[in-house]
Every structure is written in C-alpha cells, then in structure tokens.
Image 1: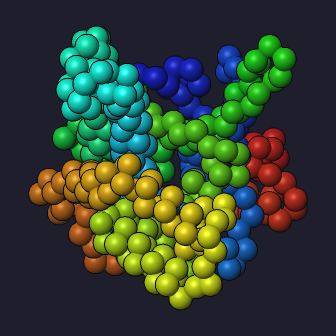
Image 2: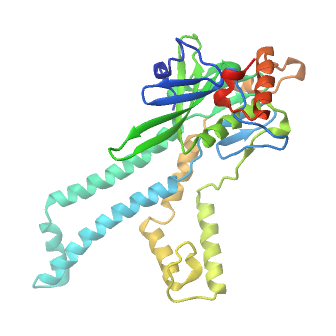
Image 3: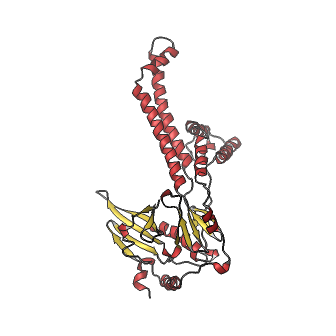
Length: 363
C-alpha cells in the first residue's frame, strides 16, 4: 500500500537517487532501478517476463494490481476453526447426556443450560472475530485500486491510500529500488528483501510510497521489469500475464466433478494418504468432502466472488478519457537522457557488469 511522508528513511527528496546507486540506511541498503528507469539486467532479444499481477494489458495501458487469490481458503480456514470449536462444545453436551440419569434429550438440554455462559460468549466472540477479519480484508482488498501505466502518454496513475482522487505522474520520475534489510534473531542473521516504488505527489514535495516484501532480489527485478519493459521496450518484449484461476463456485463445481469422475473410473483403494488426489481412495474422497462440509461447502467461494466484485469499481470519467489510445503522432517519446543512459547501461551489461555497479562505470 502507498503511504505518504514515509520516504525519509532512504532520503529520497533531500537527495534524489540515480539508477544503479547503492544507498545505505539504518538496517541495510538499497539498489535503485530508477530514475531514469533502467533495465535491471541484460535483456536478450527473446526475453519476456510473466506476471500474475497484470490485470489488463493493451496497446495503450497496463494495469498492475493484486488478484483475489486465497480468499476462499481464508474463509474455509475460518469456518473450520469455528466449527471445530463448536464440535468441542457439542461433545461436552453429549458427554453430559451420557452421565445424566434420565432421558438423553433432557440430559442434553441440562448440559446446555449448565455450561457456563462464558463458553457461549467465547464461541460467539471467536466466530465474530473470524468474520470481522474476513470482511475487513475484503474491504482492504477493494480499496487497493490498480496502478495504471499509460505507455503512449508515458504516465502512471494511482489512487493513494484508498483515495478516490487519482494521482498522475510522469513515468521517468518514478523512483524504484530493491532493499536488503538485515536483522538478528539472537542466534542467526536474517536478510529480508523489499521491492519499493515511490510516485511523486502532484505538488512535487513528497512521494507516495509502495513497499512489497519479496523472496529475493530476482523477484524484485522481475516486478520492475514487468513495468519497465511495457513502458520502454518494443511489443515483442512486453510482459505476459500468467494464467489466473478464479476462485468461484464454477471453479469449485468443475473441480468436484473432475474428482468424482476420476474416482468412478478407478482404480479405487480403500485407504491412502495422497490428499493431493482426493480420487485416489475412499478415505481421501471422504476427507475431501468432510473438509468442504466443515468449511461450509460453497460459502467460501461466494465470499471470494463478492470480494472480487468489490474491487471492480468504475473509473472516474477523466481517467477513462486519459486511458484512451492516442494517435501515434501524439505519443510521448522517451527523453534523450533516458535513451543515452540506457545505451550506456546495456554496454555495461554486455561487458558483464550489473546494475549495482553501473554508477561507478557509466560515462
């Protein structure tokens, strides 16, 4: 998420960075990809980047944003926790029924009435917290509007911190980096990696800042190249959108039918522990159905569909107009400074150099 007035750690405004610069901060150091936006590594003619963050891409613009991925699993996990706690309470009531002298129904009601109200209150609060987190994360996701990169205008549009007012900034002024932070657990030294991007505010006095944890420097480079190759490279090098499996009821039904059809065809075992293939045995198929019943069947997928719809808000009319393709004669061109610097860094890469030592060798 972008946050305002958080760029002081890297001293972005007081000392504007350059592509290839290494800058130390309190817990580590950062290597900058821009400005001006430079390649993160050597690009071969057939090099392309695949990204699941590409929501839409065409000749005019590309949208980068979060997918509604994992929401169904989050709801399933929450329901399983709620129902597991409910089963514990039910077992207590059943135990009361077996230990009470009288009819089982009377014993069950007696056990229900004698269980302390704290247990009921805890169960209600626990269920409420689970659903509060579920709904809150859905609305948090909906507030994360995608970043739109307009290739022909060479501009970037973003809605900072869930604002309804878009910010448009020049592409070549975007600051981006990968940061390596080191910390200790007492016995081990740990390194964490963060991809960062800062978009200038309209008044030019500060930045809206994006930080995303990544697994490695390579992943940060791929994130950057997804944006840069679309904006600055010919179409044959544009990034590709990775296939995305939508978590909805249609997907659940199709998967369930596939598993059932495979199970009927056989061969079928009585017991196996290959839970990645529910059709492998009676036991794994029973486990598959028990899991989904405990997780409230299709409700998690309905929540996932609802969350996905929350994010599909209509764009303001001025941004719809801004997003339209331009006649080729009106396309903005890369600056002479960017083209000259890119030519130098490509020679630097061809000679075996890296982005991190570009500043020390550039002409």
